[in-house]
Image (cartoon, rainbow, N blue to C red; front, top):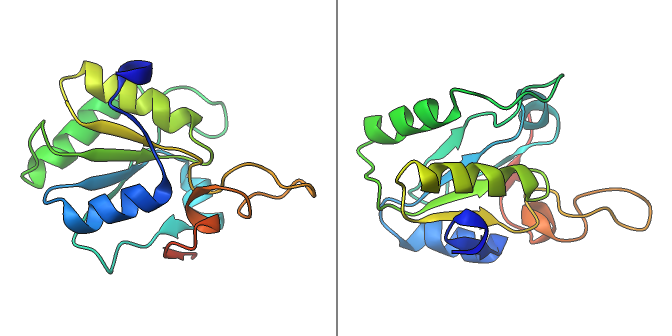
Length: 144
């Protein structure tokens, strides 16, 4: 296992898995501010849940000490078992990789990191959302 979890996958591979694999789930580990102002993956066209659980607080950046407990509880409530595929996404892929590793250590066997995250890397003008990531791949998303 690379990085302490099952591996990195592209946003497109994640979308296909969410659509095709029974029990697959997406966990967005960004902050509430990011969900509100940047947007969220829209899974309304696939039969998969989207869990929103912050990995780090904003402001401050402290790691959410209750992350494993919160996600484990949400997964159990939905009837998901520890062998179900779980895909983790953040802005660019760093926080989600850490979350995938922690959940793997907690006994979840199929944790994947969405490479490039929701927004991907910065382009030549310093903007995200055009190079790599969920948005640049043209996958469904919504903004409040």
